[in-house]
Amino acid sequence: MFNERLKNYRESKNLLKREFAGALDVSESYYNMIENGKRNPSKSFIEKLVCESNMPEEYWIYGIEKNDYINVREDLKCVRKAVEQIMDLGLVKDVDKLFNGNYPEGTLEELLIAALKADIEYLLEKKKINKED
Image 1 (cartoon, one colour):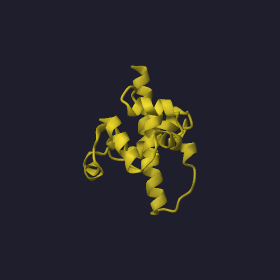
Image 2: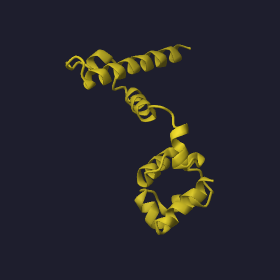
Image 3: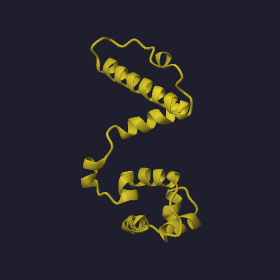
Image 4: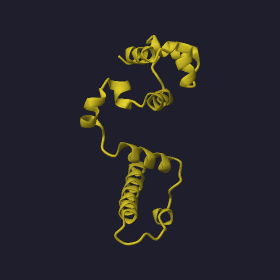
């Protein structure tokens, strides 16, 4: 269970609850409720825990060990999440304006920008269609 993984991790670092709560930038009472299983962690808490521990979200939420993580991780998860956040913030309205740099033909930059542009265009269109439904 999540709270057991959290407690075991904290104890493995020889931290008191208040110390670990401080490292995660949450109140000690909130941390206590989570570690005692009285409250579910927020998305923000999970994100802080992932950053603090350098362990994947899948470990914390589902108990998937690091060795098994490679087989279950969603492909391009971080890129997809970043693009979705950019879209949610309304930072991308015109993809052509976003990628207006001139990259030398045949370079890594050109390839990556073309792929990212295509995926952002797809996700924007998908979002637009889903809103219409």
